[in-house]
Amino acid sequence: MGEKVASENDINKGRRALISKIGVFGLVAAFFTWIGSTFRFLYPQVFYNPPSKVRFDLQSILGKTKGATIDESGILLVDDSYLLTNNFFIVVAIDKIYALSARCTHLGCTVNWVGSQRTFKCPCHGSQYTSIGKNFAGPAPKPLEVLKITKINRNIAEVDTKNRADLLDSKSGYALNI
Ligand code: FES
Image 1: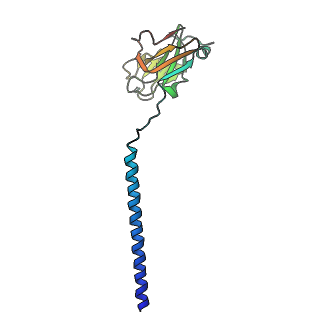
Image 2: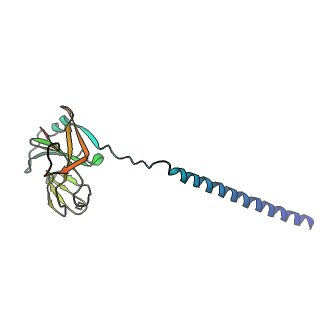
Image 3: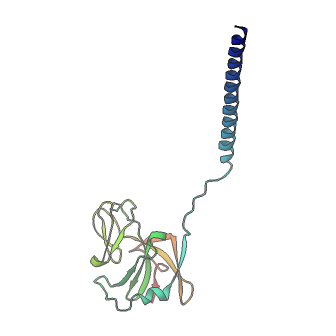
């Protein structure tokens, strides 16, 4: 009988020890979670945006116009090499080259170039733009914007994606003569 009571006490002791260990572990985990979340505020959140200035090879873009025909807006080539990475198109007209923003002027979706129709089309609400970027269908209230473009040397041009202007009002600095 005495032995039985002693073993029940042992079991109870073991249970209490286990519960107290779990409690201590919980407290330690909560403490480190609190420390971690407190120190997280000391570090700024970093967003990796693409650089705002993008350089491209003028001669290689111009090389793509070989054999191209001029469309009714006077455009030889729309190049979408920088669409995915920097959200603009390079447009080559008969006498100039410029960078056209791919941001729809309705609510900001990214437009696509549909070469077979010589048209930029917005997948969101159906706005359409000619190959020079002029809106002609859908809710877009104005043309696509042009981005500042600078000739660095004979071969290299630089587009500043943060410096934009209305296509029709743009002054010098938004196209390069070729
Ligand atoms: S965002 Fe392009 S049509 Fe609405």
